[in-house]
Every structure is written in structure tokens, then in C-alpha cells.
Image (cartoon, rainbow, N blue to C red; front, top):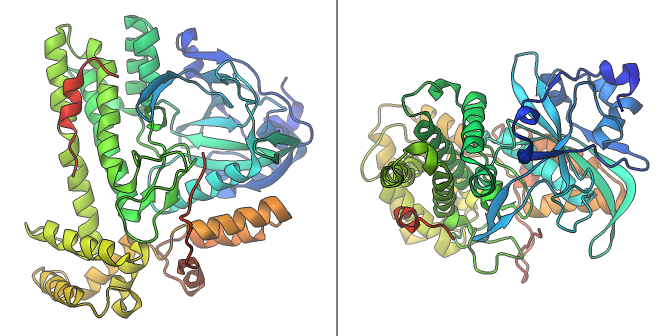
Length: 503
């Protein structure tokens, strides 16, 4: 199904290492062609870094590939099988509306999955149509690129094309396909699938593949599979701390949405917090707050415990010893997370060194912010630029006392005030993708065909630490509303759960 010279010159340099794994891990099939694809947005800098020709991607042949109507040279499209705990319940899953078309090898020798999301039905569609609507695909594009600019590990968005075909949800919507770029699509759920339905040999093959692809430095360790577990724990501790530091709420932290690479994946019911409240939930289906902002570290640990369970046969031939190794590794997560979070919070307050009272200083500030519903992003921005009067905390006795303690704390370090200010500038974004701004951009694009609002939003989000005048309007809060903002979208070894207690 390869299409001539235009596609070859696009710059695709695809390998298919995942397709060389056991056939039970995936199903090979081509995307379902669409009627009349149209390119809506292309990530030119990302395309260039991947070694792709931007002009060729914008051509008819290039768009055909982004829509799934053409298969580039060297591609072997496939849908990956995986499982997952969804809101705590274990299910067989898989790519129900996405296909991995191959792994792009960049000019620097890096390897990235190229996946089409919304490319048609697969054996894992579970009754779904395998398609995606334009709004959610543009939403993923905006949020994933904003996360990248914030310095948070994430999958990225190369392009969005419309299909010329409707998708039926509550109403008829315009269909679209997102091209997603990832270090890989290996998930905790991938290991759960193989551990539950595969063989011991297949589990070892998957673990060896993961080590070679993501953790080559520990591949030759004496206990490589224990090292694999430890490295995944470290990456997730870093990732979730970064989420917390910018007020990001993933919304659906199922085990199939936790990557082994440590990237944020699947931007469904995600959003950023305005007023600080650990109980904040945006997902309309998370009625009990399982994935609330303040619960994300705990759920991260819970998910990692599920990952550890899949590795038990590889950790030690003796089941009891394997469980002990897993317990010891998982028990490190709360401290690793807290250490990363505390270091990040110190930076947000301009603190370079460590003092034992820092935790209390930070918690006191967050307690005030919760009490007065202070905006999370704007409060830290106000502290950065010394404009505390712009916050609801200003004028309260407890804030005045806290501010005095904070200034005294800064005075006990060797670094200058100018250095602290620069550290805060680099650690506190001027803006985030505010929910009302994202909705504004999506409404203009989907309902009016006006993509200029989204383009302006993407422009200011691309440099969140610039603190430029043009970003000022995008830091304002939404108008007060009586309706909270909403987005749409059991293990045998229970002793592992007891170790997850992140405060």
C-alpha cells in the first residue's frame, strides 16, 4: 500500500522492533481509510527533530499517511494488546482505536513510536467504532505540547487531521486522527497482559526488550529485572512530582495509562487546577475522587505495586524472596516521590539549600492557599515577582507571618536575592493551559472552523517561563461559576498495597 516518491521523500526512517516480539503481544493490521483527510495542524519543530520533511508532510501524500490512507515505506502497522486496572478493576484492553505504524529512527539515532489515534477498529475495540472526534484530539495536542514546554516528560503530538467523516457520540461530531509520538507505548498494563495471559518465556522477552529499549545502563546488572523495577519507580516518582508542582491532574491514572518510560500519556479527562484544593477532580466519571490531585502520588504507588507483581517470576525463583525484593523496591517510592516534590517546592520558593523546617514552611503556605482558595499558579507567580497584593492571601495575618518566615529563610542561604528570583522564574510558569482558555480554543476550532484562537494559545504556552507581557491575559482566572469544571472521558499479593502510604 506504499505510495510513491512523495512519501519516500517525507523522511520516514522506520524500524519495527515491537513487531518482532511474540505475535500474542499485538495484532497486525492497516488503518481504516478515511474519506477526505485534511491537515489541521502540524508540529513543525517536532517533525524536524524526527528527521521528517515538513513540506512533504503537508503534501497530499504526506497527509494520506497522517490519515492512515497511505502506509509509509518500512511501516508494519499493529495494535498493541495490554490489560489494566481501570478505577481498581482489572480488564483485558488493548489499542481499540490506535495503531503503531512504526518506530522512527531520528538523525540523532533516537527511537520514537509513531502512532495514529482514531485510525479505525481493531480486535481490541470492545464494540467501539475505533474513531476519534476532533475536539478531544485537538485537546490532546494542546495539553501534551504544553506539558512538554513545562519540562514534564510526555508523549507528544505531531499532527491532527480531520477525516471528512462524522463520529457519533452524544451527537454527530467531526472525525479526526492524532499522530502521537512516544518514547514507547509500553505500559504497566502491557506487563499485566503478558503476566496474566502469556508464558514465563514471553514475560522475560518483554522485560528484556524493555531493558534494551529504555534502560540499557542496567541491562547487564546482576539482577536486571529488579533494576528494571527500581528504574521505573524512579521515573514515576519524578513524573508525578512534576505533575504536582504545576497543579496538573491526569484524571484517569489506570495502570494502562502509566508508561514504563516515565512519560505522561493519554490526555482524556485531564486539566490544570486553578484554586488550590487537594480534593480537586475534573473527570465526570471519577465520582469518588480516586484520581483527585492530592491522591495522585498514592495511586502512582498503587500502580507500581501492580507492576511489581508482574515481575515476581523474574525477580527470584523463590516466591517468598521475590515478594520481599518487590516490597523493598516499592517501599522506596514514597520517599523518592517526596524528595523530588520537596526539591521542586524549594525551587518554587527560591530556596537552594536544605533545612529541616522547609517542609513545614511549604505545608503552611499550601494550607493557607487551600483555606482561601488561592489560585495555585498565580500565587507562586506573585511570590516570584513580589506582587503578593495580587493574591487573596495578601492582608491576612497568617500570610504576613508566613512571609516573614520565608524571607528569613531566604536570608539564611548564601545565594543572592537575584539568584533566588531567577530560580523562581525558572520554576514557576507564567501560565498554564487554563481550562477556560482551552475550551475557548476548542469551541472556536470545532464549532466555527477558526483555528487562530488555538494557534495563539499554543504560541504563549510554548514558553511558559518567559513571563512575557503577551502571556498576561492568559493567566487570568475564569469568571465565577456555580458549576465546577468537568471533563469527559484484585492482586494476590496484598502485602504490597500496605507499603503505599504517600502523604
